[in-house]
Picture 1: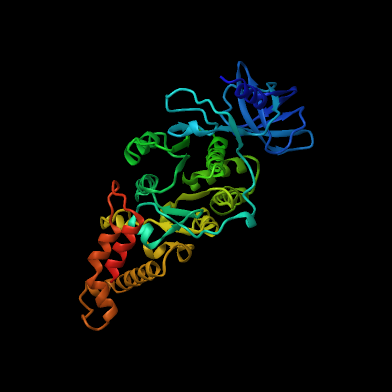
Picture 2: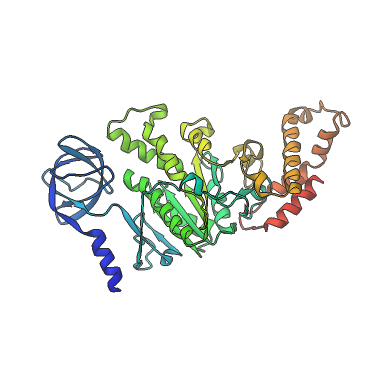
Length: 432
Protein backbone atom coordinates (compact mmCIF):
# COMPACT_ATOMS: atom_id res chain seq x y z
CA UNK A 1 0.00 0.00 0.00
CA UNK A 2 1.47 3.47 -0.86
CA UNK A 3 2.81 5.41 2.15
CA UNK A 4 0.59 8.42 1.36
CA UNK A 5 -2.53 6.25 1.43
CA UNK A 6 -1.41 4.59 4.67
CA UNK A 7 -0.92 7.96 6.34
CA UNK A 8 -4.42 9.04 5.32
CA UNK A 9 -5.95 5.85 6.74
CA UNK A 10 -4.09 6.21 10.03
CA UNK A 11 -5.08 9.85 10.31
CA UNK A 12 -8.75 9.10 9.63
CA UNK A 13 -8.92 6.40 12.31
CA UNK A 14 -6.82 8.09 15.01
CA UNK A 15 -8.64 8.03 18.35
CA UNK A 16 -8.57 10.37 21.31
CA UNK A 17 -6.51 9.25 24.33
CA UNK A 18 -9.41 10.17 26.65
CA UNK A 19 -12.40 7.89 26.78
CA UNK A 20 -15.95 7.85 28.05
CA UNK A 21 -18.01 4.99 29.44
CA UNK A 22 -21.40 3.51 28.65
CA UNK A 23 -23.94 4.24 31.40
CA UNK A 24 -27.07 2.61 29.97
CA UNK A 25 -28.26 0.75 26.89
CA UNK A 26 -31.73 0.41 25.37
CA UNK A 27 -32.99 -1.22 22.19
CA UNK A 28 -31.85 1.54 19.81
CA UNK A 29 -29.53 3.88 21.67
CA UNK A 30 -26.62 4.00 24.11
CA UNK A 31 -26.12 6.65 26.81
CA UNK A 32 -22.50 7.44 27.73
CA UNK A 33 -20.59 10.01 29.79
CA UNK A 34 -17.04 11.32 30.13
CA UNK A 35 -16.37 12.95 26.75
CA UNK A 36 -16.98 16.41 25.31
CA UNK A 37 -18.73 15.69 22.04
CA UNK A 38 -20.89 17.43 19.46
CA UNK A 39 -23.87 16.25 17.44
CA UNK A 40 -22.81 14.18 14.45
CA UNK A 41 -19.38 13.17 15.75
CA UNK A 42 -18.41 9.55 15.29
CA UNK A 43 -17.22 7.40 18.17
CA UNK A 44 -15.77 3.92 18.55
CA UNK A 45 -17.18 1.61 21.23
CA UNK A 46 -14.81 -1.04 22.61
CA UNK A 47 -17.15 -3.98 23.15
CA UNK A 48 -14.93 -6.83 24.33
CA UNK A 49 -12.50 -7.58 21.49
CA UNK A 50 -14.65 -5.74 18.94
CA UNK A 51 -14.66 -2.12 17.85
CA UNK A 52 -18.14 -0.82 17.02
CA UNK A 53 -18.78 2.45 15.20
CA UNK A 54 -21.49 4.83 16.39
CA UNK A 55 -22.64 8.44 16.08
CA UNK A 56 -23.57 11.06 18.67
CA UNK A 57 -27.22 11.90 18.06
CA UNK A 58 -28.31 13.63 21.28
CA UNK A 59 -26.64 15.70 24.02
CA UNK A 60 -27.47 16.31 27.69
CA UNK A 61 -25.74 18.33 30.40
CA UNK A 62 -23.68 15.37 31.65
CA UNK A 63 -24.31 12.61 29.14
CA UNK A 64 -24.74 12.00 25.43
CA UNK A 65 -26.64 9.47 23.32
CA UNK A 66 -24.97 7.27 20.72
CA UNK A 67 -26.81 5.52 17.91
CA UNK A 68 -24.73 2.52 16.73
CA UNK A 69 -24.13 1.69 13.08
CA UNK A 70 -24.42 -1.98 13.95
CA UNK A 71 -26.42 -3.78 16.60
CA UNK A 72 -26.16 -3.53 20.38
CA UNK A 73 -25.71 -7.24 21.09
CA UNK A 74 -22.48 -7.85 23.02
CA UNK A 75 -22.27 -4.32 24.47
CA UNK A 76 -22.51 -3.75 28.22
CA UNK A 77 -22.50 -0.96 30.79
CA UNK A 78 -18.91 0.12 31.47
CA UNK A 79 -17.63 -0.43 27.91
CA UNK A 80 -15.26 2.36 26.85
CA UNK A 81 -16.17 4.96 24.22
CA UNK A 82 -13.42 6.64 22.16
CA UNK A 83 -13.93 9.82 20.15
CA UNK A 84 -12.81 9.68 16.52
CA UNK A 85 -10.84 12.79 15.62
CA UNK A 86 -12.32 13.08 12.15
CA UNK A 87 -15.97 13.24 11.24
CA UNK A 88 -17.45 10.48 9.10
CA UNK A 89 -15.46 10.42 5.87
CA UNK A 90 -15.48 7.69 3.26
CA UNK A 91 -12.70 6.70 0.85
CA UNK A 92 -13.55 7.37 -2.80
CA UNK A 93 -11.91 6.96 -6.19
CA UNK A 94 -12.10 5.53 -9.68
CA UNK A 95 -11.52 1.99 -8.35
CA UNK A 96 -15.08 1.98 -6.98
CA UNK A 97 -16.42 1.61 -10.52
CA UNK A 98 -17.83 -1.84 -11.17
CA UNK A 99 -18.02 -2.67 -7.46
CA UNK A 100 -20.76 -3.35 -4.89
CA UNK A 101 -19.97 -1.76 -1.52
CA UNK A 102 -21.51 -0.96 1.86
CA UNK A 103 -22.01 2.66 3.05
CA UNK A 104 -18.36 2.80 4.26
CA UNK A 105 -17.06 1.61 0.88
CA UNK A 106 -16.18 -1.87 2.13
CA UNK A 107 -16.60 -4.33 -0.75
CA UNK A 108 -19.39 -6.90 -0.41
CA UNK A 109 -19.07 -8.45 -3.88
CA UNK A 110 -16.26 -10.89 -3.02
CA UNK A 111 -13.86 -9.30 -5.53
CA UNK A 112 -11.19 -8.30 -3.03
CA UNK A 113 -10.21 -5.12 -1.22
CA UNK A 114 -10.46 -1.65 -2.77
CA UNK A 115 -7.50 0.70 -2.18
CA UNK A 116 -8.67 4.31 -2.40
CA UNK A 117 -6.63 7.45 -1.76
CA UNK A 118 -9.22 10.26 -1.67
CA UNK A 119 -11.72 10.96 1.10
CA UNK A 120 -15.14 12.60 0.99
CA UNK A 121 -17.33 13.64 3.95
CA UNK A 122 -20.63 11.77 4.15
CA UNK A 123 -22.51 14.82 5.42
CA UNK A 124 -22.16 18.19 3.73
CA UNK A 125 -24.32 21.15 2.83
CA UNK A 126 -25.97 21.25 -0.60
CA UNK A 127 -24.37 23.59 -3.14
CA UNK A 128 -25.20 27.29 -2.89
CA UNK A 129 -28.32 28.29 -4.80
CA UNK A 130 -26.46 30.91 -6.88
CA UNK A 131 -23.78 28.39 -7.91
CA UNK A 132 -26.30 26.06 -9.51
CA UNK A 133 -26.17 25.91 -13.28
CA UNK A 134 -29.33 26.28 -15.34
CA UNK A 135 -30.86 23.02 -16.49
CA UNK A 136 -30.86 23.57 -20.25
CA UNK A 137 -29.67 20.22 -21.70
CA UNK A 138 -31.79 17.12 -22.03
CA UNK A 139 -30.76 13.93 -20.21
CA UNK A 140 -31.65 10.83 -22.20
CA UNK A 141 -32.56 7.61 -20.37
CA UNK A 142 -33.38 5.53 -23.46
CA UNK A 143 -37.07 5.09 -22.53
CA UNK A 144 -39.64 6.42 -25.00
CA UNK A 145 -42.32 7.49 -22.55
CA UNK A 146 -39.81 9.43 -20.39
CA UNK A 147 -37.58 10.91 -23.09
CA UNK A 148 -40.53 11.83 -25.29
CA UNK A 149 -43.20 13.00 -22.84
CA UNK A 150 -41.44 13.62 -19.48
CA UNK A 151 -38.07 14.78 -20.77
CA UNK A 152 -35.41 15.10 -18.07
CA UNK A 153 -32.54 17.58 -17.97
CA UNK A 154 -28.96 17.26 -16.75
CA UNK A 155 -29.02 18.10 -13.05
CA UNK A 156 -32.73 17.41 -12.56
CA UNK A 157 -34.17 15.62 -9.50
CA UNK A 158 -36.98 13.21 -10.41
CA UNK A 159 -39.16 11.01 -8.24
CA UNK A 160 -40.49 7.61 -9.33
CA UNK A 161 -43.69 6.93 -7.35
CA UNK A 162 -45.03 3.40 -7.31
CA UNK A 163 -46.82 0.85 -5.17
CA UNK A 164 -45.35 -2.57 -4.52
CA UNK A 165 -45.07 -4.95 -7.46
CA UNK A 166 -45.81 -2.38 -10.16
CA UNK A 167 -42.44 -2.56 -11.96
CA UNK A 168 -40.26 -0.06 -10.14
CA UNK A 169 -37.08 -2.20 -10.15
CA UNK A 170 -37.48 -2.99 -13.85
CA UNK A 171 -37.78 0.70 -14.69
CA UNK A 172 -34.72 1.46 -12.53
CA UNK A 173 -32.69 -1.10 -14.46
CA UNK A 174 -33.85 0.36 -17.78
CA UNK A 175 -32.80 3.87 -16.70
CA UNK A 176 -29.37 2.71 -15.48
CA UNK A 177 -28.73 0.73 -18.68
CA UNK A 178 -30.13 3.32 -21.08
CA UNK A 179 -28.96 6.63 -19.60
CA UNK A 180 -26.26 8.69 -21.28
CA UNK A 181 -24.45 9.35 -17.97
CA UNK A 182 -20.71 8.65 -17.90
CA UNK A 183 -20.89 7.49 -14.24
CA UNK A 184 -23.80 5.73 -12.50
CA UNK A 185 -24.23 5.50 -8.73
CA UNK A 186 -27.03 3.25 -7.46
CA UNK A 187 -28.07 3.31 -3.78
CA UNK A 188 -30.17 0.32 -2.64
CA UNK A 189 -31.42 1.41 0.77
CA UNK A 190 -33.55 -0.70 3.10
CA UNK A 191 -34.58 -3.27 0.50
CA UNK A 192 -34.55 -7.05 0.92
CA UNK A 193 -31.11 -8.65 0.66
CA UNK A 194 -32.43 -11.02 -2.02
CA UNK A 195 -33.16 -8.06 -4.29
CA UNK A 196 -29.53 -6.93 -4.54
CA UNK A 197 -28.07 -9.83 -6.61
CA UNK A 198 -31.43 -10.09 -8.40
CA UNK A 199 -31.30 -6.42 -9.43
CA UNK A 200 -27.71 -6.78 -10.67
CA UNK A 201 -28.35 -10.02 -12.57
CA UNK A 202 -31.84 -9.47 -13.97
CA UNK A 203 -32.22 -5.71 -14.30
CA UNK A 204 -28.61 -4.78 -15.10
CA UNK A 205 -27.61 -7.99 -16.86
CA UNK A 206 -24.52 -8.25 -14.60
CA UNK A 207 -23.07 -5.22 -16.40
CA UNK A 208 -21.59 -2.82 -13.84
CA UNK A 209 -19.51 -0.81 -16.30
CA UNK A 210 -18.94 2.69 -14.87
CA UNK A 211 -21.38 1.82 -12.08
CA UNK A 212 -21.06 1.89 -8.28
CA UNK A 213 -23.70 0.15 -6.19
CA UNK A 214 -24.00 1.15 -2.52
CA UNK A 215 -26.05 -1.28 -0.42
CA UNK A 216 -27.66 -1.03 3.02
CA UNK A 217 -30.29 -3.74 3.28
CA UNK A 218 -33.31 -3.96 5.56
CA UNK A 219 -31.40 -6.09 8.09
CA UNK A 220 -28.80 -3.31 8.60
CA UNK A 221 -29.24 -0.86 11.46
CA UNK A 222 -31.36 2.27 11.00
CA UNK A 223 -28.24 4.47 11.11
CA UNK A 224 -26.57 2.37 8.40
CA UNK A 225 -29.65 2.73 6.17
CA UNK A 226 -29.83 6.47 6.80
CA UNK A 227 -26.17 7.18 6.06
CA UNK A 228 -26.08 4.71 3.18
CA UNK A 229 -28.06 7.24 1.13
CA UNK A 230 -25.78 10.15 2.09
CA UNK A 231 -22.71 8.01 1.46
CA UNK A 232 -23.86 7.16 -2.08
CA UNK A 233 -24.56 10.85 -2.74
CA UNK A 234 -20.99 11.68 -1.60
CA UNK A 235 -19.65 9.19 -4.17
CA UNK A 236 -21.74 10.89 -6.86
CA UNK A 237 -20.44 14.31 -5.77
CA UNK A 238 -16.84 13.09 -6.04
CA UNK A 239 -17.35 12.14 -9.69
CA UNK A 240 -19.33 15.33 -10.35
CA UNK A 241 -16.36 17.35 -9.11
CA UNK A 242 -14.22 15.47 -11.64
CA UNK A 243 -16.45 16.87 -14.41
CA UNK A 244 -18.66 13.82 -15.03
CA UNK A 245 -22.38 13.83 -15.74
CA UNK A 246 -23.51 11.39 -13.05
CA UNK A 247 -26.72 9.40 -12.80
CA UNK A 248 -27.74 8.93 -9.17
CA UNK A 249 -30.43 6.31 -8.61
CA UNK A 250 -31.82 5.59 -5.15
CA UNK A 251 -34.30 2.93 -4.07
CA UNK A 252 -36.03 3.93 -1.92
CA UNK A 253 -36.71 7.26 -0.22
CA UNK A 254 -39.47 5.65 1.84
CA UNK A 255 -37.09 3.14 3.48
CA UNK A 256 -34.63 6.00 4.09
CA UNK A 257 -37.35 8.01 5.86
CA UNK A 258 -38.40 4.92 7.85
CA UNK A 259 -34.81 4.57 9.10
CA UNK A 260 -34.91 8.16 10.37
CA UNK A 261 -38.32 7.44 11.92
CA UNK A 262 -36.75 4.64 13.98
CA UNK A 263 -33.89 6.91 15.09
CA UNK A 264 -36.12 9.90 15.84
CA UNK A 265 -38.67 7.98 17.87
CA UNK A 266 -35.89 6.28 19.87
CA UNK A 267 -34.58 9.76 20.76
CA UNK A 268 -38.01 10.90 21.95
CA UNK A 269 -39.20 12.95 18.96
CA UNK A 270 -42.97 13.35 18.74
CA UNK A 271 -44.63 11.30 16.00
CA UNK A 272 -46.69 13.16 13.39
CA UNK A 273 -48.56 11.84 10.34
CA UNK A 274 -48.15 8.03 9.98
CA UNK A 275 -45.73 8.07 12.91
CA UNK A 276 -43.02 10.06 11.11
CA UNK A 277 -41.19 12.52 13.41
CA UNK A 278 -40.34 16.01 12.07
CA UNK A 279 -36.72 15.00 11.40
CA UNK A 280 -37.85 12.46 8.76
CA UNK A 281 -39.30 15.26 6.65
CA UNK A 282 -36.46 17.76 7.20
CA UNK A 283 -33.92 15.08 6.20
CA UNK A 284 -35.31 14.71 2.66
CA UNK A 285 -34.14 18.10 1.28
CA UNK A 286 -30.74 17.62 2.95
CA UNK A 287 -30.22 14.62 0.67
CA UNK A 288 -32.14 15.60 -2.45
CA UNK A 289 -30.78 19.13 -2.77
CA UNK A 290 -27.24 17.79 -3.05
CA UNK A 291 -28.07 16.64 -6.58
CA UNK A 292 -27.96 19.17 -9.40
CA UNK A 293 -25.73 20.94 -11.88
CA UNK A 294 -22.89 23.13 -10.62
CA UNK A 295 -21.06 25.82 -12.60
CA UNK A 296 -17.58 24.70 -13.60
CA UNK A 297 -18.21 21.07 -12.64
CA UNK A 298 -20.31 18.17 -13.86
CA UNK A 299 -23.88 17.33 -12.90
CA UNK A 300 -25.84 14.83 -10.81
CA UNK A 301 -29.16 13.83 -12.35
CA UNK A 302 -31.04 12.01 -9.62
CA UNK A 303 -33.93 9.55 -9.75
CA UNK A 304 -35.42 8.75 -6.33
CA UNK A 305 -37.96 5.96 -6.04
CA UNK A 306 -40.76 6.44 -3.52
CA UNK A 307 -42.73 3.41 -2.37
CA UNK A 308 -46.34 4.56 -2.15
CA UNK A 309 -48.16 2.39 0.38
CA UNK A 310 -51.59 1.40 -0.90
CA UNK A 311 -50.98 3.54 -4.04
CA UNK A 312 -51.74 6.59 -1.88
CA UNK A 313 -49.95 9.61 -3.38
CA UNK A 314 -50.97 11.74 -0.37
CA UNK A 315 -48.61 9.72 1.85
CA UNK A 316 -46.49 12.25 3.84
CA UNK A 317 -43.17 11.07 2.37
CA UNK A 318 -44.55 11.06 -1.18
CA UNK A 319 -46.09 14.49 -0.69
CA UNK A 320 -42.93 16.00 0.78
CA UNK A 321 -40.75 14.43 -1.94
CA UNK A 322 -42.96 15.81 -4.72
CA UNK A 323 -42.59 19.32 -3.31
CA UNK A 324 -38.76 19.09 -3.35
CA UNK A 325 -38.21 17.32 -6.67
CA UNK A 326 -38.19 18.83 -10.18
CA UNK A 327 -40.51 16.23 -11.62
CA UNK A 328 -42.33 13.02 -10.81
CA UNK A 329 -43.01 9.79 -12.67
CA UNK A 330 -46.03 7.84 -11.43
CA UNK A 331 -46.29 4.12 -12.19
CA UNK A 332 -49.84 2.86 -12.61
CA UNK A 333 -51.14 -0.54 -11.50
CA UNK A 334 -53.96 -0.14 -14.03
CA UNK A 335 -51.47 0.09 -16.92
CA UNK A 336 -49.66 -2.99 -15.56
CA UNK A 337 -52.96 -4.89 -15.64
CA UNK A 338 -53.42 -3.83 -19.26
CA UNK A 339 -49.95 -5.11 -20.19
CA UNK A 340 -48.35 -1.73 -20.84
CA UNK A 341 -44.72 -1.73 -19.64
CA UNK A 342 -43.13 0.39 -18.33
CA UNK A 343 -46.47 1.43 -16.75
CA UNK A 344 -45.80 5.19 -16.71
CA UNK A 345 -49.00 7.15 -16.03
CA UNK A 346 -48.31 10.13 -18.30
CA UNK A 347 -51.29 12.21 -17.13
CA UNK A 348 -50.31 11.90 -13.45
CA UNK A 349 -46.62 12.55 -14.15
CA UNK A 350 -44.77 15.76 -14.94
CA UNK A 351 -41.32 17.18 -15.69
CA UNK A 352 -40.81 20.76 -14.53
CA UNK A 353 -37.92 21.34 -16.92
CA UNK A 354 -39.35 19.94 -20.16
CA UNK A 355 -39.91 23.44 -21.58
CA UNK A 356 -36.20 24.26 -21.12
CA UNK A 357 -34.64 21.12 -22.57
CA UNK A 358 -36.77 20.41 -25.68
CA UNK A 359 -37.26 22.04 -29.09
CA UNK A 360 -40.58 23.79 -29.83
CA UNK A 361 -41.56 20.97 -32.21
CA UNK A 362 -40.85 18.29 -29.62
CA UNK A 363 -42.75 20.21 -26.92
CA UNK A 364 -45.75 20.70 -29.21
CA UNK A 365 -45.84 16.97 -30.04
CA UNK A 366 -45.62 16.02 -26.35
CA UNK A 367 -48.46 18.40 -25.42
CA UNK A 368 -50.65 17.06 -28.22
CA UNK A 369 -49.98 13.47 -27.11
CA UNK A 370 -51.02 14.33 -23.54
CA UNK A 371 -54.13 16.12 -24.82
CA UNK A 372 -55.23 13.13 -26.90
CA UNK A 373 -54.50 10.79 -23.98
CA UNK A 374 -56.61 12.95 -21.66
CA UNK A 375 -59.52 12.87 -24.12
CA UNK A 376 -59.35 9.05 -24.28
CA UNK A 377 -59.35 8.79 -20.49
CA UNK A 378 -62.24 11.25 -20.02
CA UNK A 379 -64.44 9.50 -22.57
CA UNK A 380 -63.37 5.91 -22.02
CA UNK A 381 -66.63 4.83 -20.43
CA UNK A 382 -68.79 6.44 -23.13
CA UNK A 383 -66.80 4.70 -25.86
CA UNK A 384 -66.90 1.34 -24.09
CA UNK A 385 -70.69 1.29 -23.70
CA UNK A 386 -71.21 2.56 -27.25
CA UNK A 387 -72.75 5.89 -26.19
CA UNK A 388 -70.34 7.94 -28.31
CA UNK A 389 -71.15 8.45 -31.99
CA UNK A 390 -68.15 9.01 -34.27
CA UNK A 391 -68.14 12.45 -35.87
CA UNK A 392 -69.52 14.22 -32.80
CA UNK A 393 -66.09 15.43 -31.59
CA UNK A 394 -63.28 15.66 -34.21
CA UNK A 395 -60.57 15.74 -31.53
CA UNK A 396 -61.88 12.62 -29.81
CA UNK A 397 -62.18 10.94 -33.22
CA UNK A 398 -58.49 11.72 -33.80
CA UNK A 399 -57.60 10.32 -30.37
CA UNK A 400 -59.54 7.10 -31.05
CA UNK A 401 -57.89 6.72 -34.44
CA UNK A 402 -54.42 7.05 -32.89
CA UNK A 403 -55.09 5.06 -29.72
CA UNK A 404 -53.22 1.92 -30.81
CA UNK A 405 -50.20 3.87 -32.05
CA UNK A 406 -50.11 5.85 -28.80
CA UNK A 407 -50.20 2.70 -26.68
CA UNK A 408 -47.44 1.17 -28.83
CA UNK A 409 -45.35 4.27 -28.16
CA UNK A 410 -45.78 3.81 -24.40
CA UNK A 411 -44.75 0.14 -24.56
CA UNK A 412 -41.09 -0.83 -24.42
CA UNK A 413 -39.27 -4.04 -23.52
CA UNK A 414 -36.78 -4.01 -20.67
CA UNK A 415 -33.90 -4.82 -23.04
CA UNK A 416 -34.72 -2.08 -25.56
CA UNK A 417 -32.81 1.23 -25.50
CA UNK A 418 -33.78 3.98 -27.94
CA UNK A 419 -31.66 7.01 -28.89
CA UNK A 420 -33.21 10.34 -27.90
CA UNK A 421 -33.53 11.68 -31.47
CA UNK A 422 -35.27 8.50 -32.64
CA UNK A 423 -37.75 8.75 -29.77
CA UNK A 424 -38.60 12.36 -30.70
CA UNK A 425 -39.16 11.41 -34.35
CA UNK A 426 -41.41 8.50 -33.33
CA UNK A 427 -43.43 10.85 -31.09
CA UNK A 428 -43.91 13.33 -33.94
CA UNK A 429 -45.09 10.52 -36.23
CA UNK A 430 -47.64 9.28 -33.69
CA UNK A 431 -49.34 12.67 -33.29
CA UNK A 432 -48.92 13.92 -36.86
